[in-house]
Length: 154
Image (cartoon, rainbow, N blue to C red; front, side, top):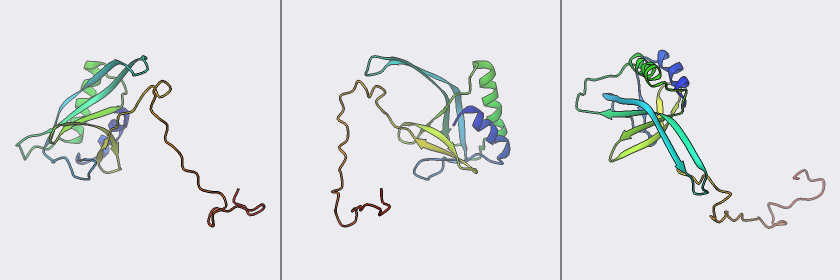
C-alpha cells in the first residue's frame, strides 16, 4: 500500500485497527511513534547497485490502555511528514514489535489495515547459481490425463 492509498482510506474510518498476519489485532492503545523515510542503498548478489525507499510507520503499544489514535490524527502526521521530510508517494513498511521488531507490508480490507508478511528474494536471479525447481511431468496416457484427437482437451 502506498501513502496515497492510506490517505484516501483514513477520512472514511471511525477508528484505526491493524491486524497481524496471524489474525490477531494490534492492541487498540497503540501509538504511531515514527513516520519516516527509510532508504536502503546496496549492492545485490549480482553486483548491481540498488536504491530502495519506503515510508516507515512504527507501531508501539505501551501501558496507557486508554490511548486511541484517531484516523484524522494519523492523517495529519502523514501530511506533516510529507511536508517536512519531502516524503513522496512511497510504499509503506510497518515496524511492529512482538518478541522482536518485525517488518510488514500494509494492506486494507475495507474495514481495517492488515500487516502483511514480507519475504526476502534474490534480486539477481540471472546471475545466481540457485538450481531451478524441477517440474514433475505427468505421464501422458495415464487414465485421467489421456487426450485423444478431437477430445477437446488440447
